[in-house]
Image (cartoon, rainbow, N blue to C red; front, side, top):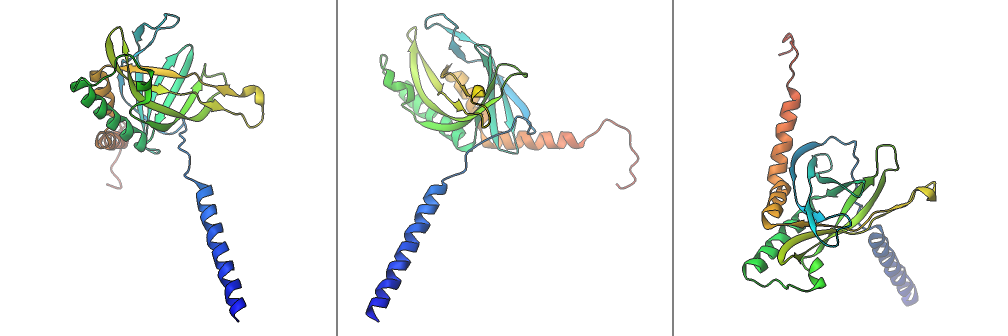
Length: 229
């Protein structure tokens, strides 16, 4: 009888271990967005990028900002080196950006920024986003999750809050010839420019914008008889 109890106990322990392993193996679902999902343009910003083949100088360029209500995702769309990038941010990523900017502003105001150090590039954390990139509408649309890190850099003795979009790898299921790797790209923000983006990332602003857009969609310029009103 005692042996039977021991065997039953061992079976129960093994079952518990297997269930734990299965739960940890599943992990969380990856964040993805479809460009075909309904979306709204909510603004644009003009931060700085490294100028093409210019050895470190910076140049302002436009980023269009879109909101995808169905996925609760914000898209930063810009073009660099002949490639159009759609950089998607979920709620968690947006909150990480806002927190990172608050920490940068604290260090800036207290004059704690380190002028010459590569270690500051990701000092304020990392988040995972989703990236879609392609050269034109007729070329392969590459898609992959990517990491974005937050930090700061000095350029010409001026500090910039930075987002680094790290490399992403797209693997085509049916043809290795269509595999793609995106470039690592750094976006440089003044504090005012970063505050602009933080305002567009604000959740109450996004929900209000989506609500106004839905109300606009219900309206129609066409004449109609109010048969069911």
